[in-house]
Image (cartoon, rainbow, N blue to C red; front, top):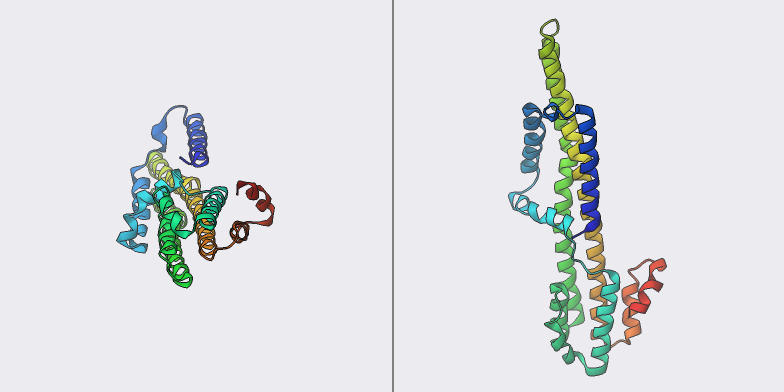
Length: 259
């Protein structure tokens, strides 16, 4: 569980709930509008179906899961793991790493390690793993795009609902004040729906996925360089330096003792 994501979501919901309670004095029905729901949420769903392929939409539960649960290894864990593998390979040979394959839960590393053990040419290993990284980047981009669409077009549908409500209000000028008030409420509530959906949920979730994607890609690049260095028979210190090349200068000293 990503505690930061959970904490941020809870804080936002609690603050929103408190303000709604204070504003309505307990009459939460004030914030319900079927017309607003249909316009904002129905309209946003229509945009998602128009803008994204069906196969990508089936992955939506995975996007949400990735927001709440994060299993990627940290740079320190990658450094420690690859350094241990490098020490073992240098001491006992590449074939000795076969016993380590079953203990590793990273499919990317396992695939690369098996190729290295089998003596596959380093250029082929790099090409294969880079292709996997590129495919992973595209999958992650689809998740970010999903939330970006909500963030961009959700408010647009909220504006459309606001305009519809205002048209209804203007059409009843001079008529029942209750009808005018109802149409004005539709306008305001729909805008509130769209604003909360876009800025309190979709935007932050998409940005978190983008950051997580960058972290995961960084870890995969570190693993790739570590594998190539191990296969080449480099000194473990050289292997470490190749991986740390992807880490900012300020964070390298903290990772070196992990090796």
